[in-house]
Structure formats: structure tokens, C-alpha cells
Image (tube, rainbow, N blue to C red):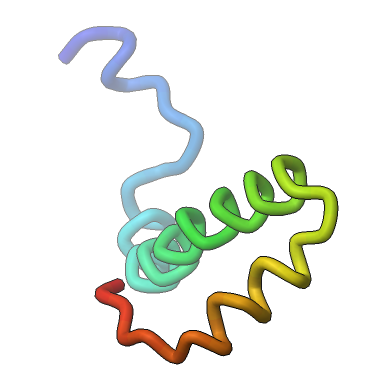
Length: 61
């Protein structure tokens, strides 16, 4: 086993214990990133969101 493989931030037992919670938490990241982009790209992001919701178009997520 290489030195790099032995050195890690979290031990295997800790990772295994919290694996499901970590995966669930990581699942929200795309939404957070999209929100950050929306907030920085548009002057009035609330208007954009309201317009999308008013269309009531089905979206594939």
C-alpha cells in the first residue's frame, strides 16, 4: 500500500458509519451551486424564480 493510500482525512470506519448521511448531504450540492449562480448572475433572482413557477411547466430533475 502506498503512503498516499494510507494517509486520508477520515478513517474507513468513520466513513462507513456516516456514508449514507454523506451521500444525502452531497446530493444537495447541485442545487446550492445553481442557487449561487442564479443569485450572482441576475439582478433580481426572485423575479426569475417567480416567472418559472408561474409557467407551471413540468421539469425533469
